[in-house]
Length: 261
Image (tube, rainbow, N blue to C red):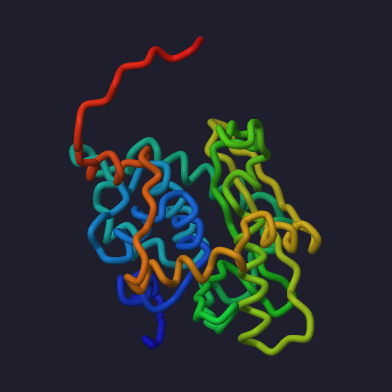
């Protein structure tokens, strides 16, 4: 089992050795795509929206200089200035810095890595902030409105993105690794990517965190995902993600059937 640090936390070897909440959610979306990512056969596109979030994360983790060195594309080649979208990220940062209460929750060691065996498998987490009293995760989101989910209809943004599940997993792994008798409370410190950034500091109650583990069926699904990772059973394909579209093989013509209005 590989010993983790920040440099290799997201490496192929680390993802093969450990489960993480992001990997679990990837399996939920598409088993075939998740396995291809673990094997290095598919790399998810780094969108501008994700990069803006990474910029904000890097600032509060004290790693912004390294982030900008690794991503020269954040600068305008002609002027040498930050591109407009990353100036937006600086507005988001300034909005957080202007709120003393929110800022007080972004304390403690940053980017803490913890590992533990849970449900029979090794897991890894990287907590944005943990001071021994609470776990705080910094999120950058489009806005705080509801999100349309084809499977469920309108959902609040926390449930849609699985942040309640993330908090529940972080709690469990931190508690096991530290030997605490009770899990630490979990908070989201969120800022929007709107022209005028909005902020929220949210405590997710314990009953919601416990429910997220059941709603996502973590205990029921984890054995299957482990067997897929080990190459023992074949993953299913969602048929709609970019990986499935990229690797689809036609075996025979389809019969056309008009869709009902």
